[in-house]
Length: 264
Image (cartoon, rainbow, N blue to C red; front, side, top):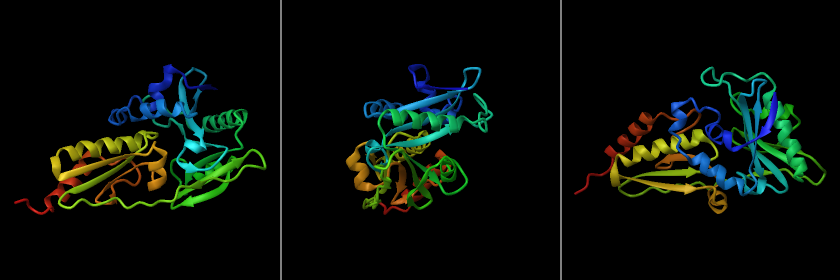
């Protein structure tokens, strides 16, 4: 196994989290690729792990915390560590040490770039991106937002813990219409997939559904709302967990539209 930097050869599979075999991931559009191009100008770093046959099985993406989803200074922030674990496509690469190798490579890189520490986030539940996994690698608690825990590893005494951006989330309702509010950052294909499905479902109802898209790669928008990704219908989230199927979003909007006051 070896760990390499992202090259042009691997940009497309990286932008779909190595799931280039998945029809579902293709629904997510090019938001991740556009995010990657924009964030590379702000210091985005990507490492890929290859097995002994040269097949890429894992990835890690991280950037200066000042341009990330959280508040901090002098750190690098890990958006995600992902090792392909599906039997479809390139196969299952989990339980081979790729995650640890990627994290170590990212930390070494951040140190060489002058970072004071590394920040990451994880879930308190035993699913993807577990906070407990980072803690086993030497990370400590920094902040918490619901089921999301922010952790960090200081590289020097001057390092200070990062914090979550505090939410001020009150998506407006629109009189006489169904309001769909979408926060779109681009870093995660799963979130992008839900957005693309919601956008397509909203378009079916013409002017009865008003879609507002908020680009949270804009730091001001991110700090103003305190949320990077999510789709909300009349202020209620449509997603907690795996990507919501298109038909479910379509039915949700149709039900809301039927309850609208009839037009004269």
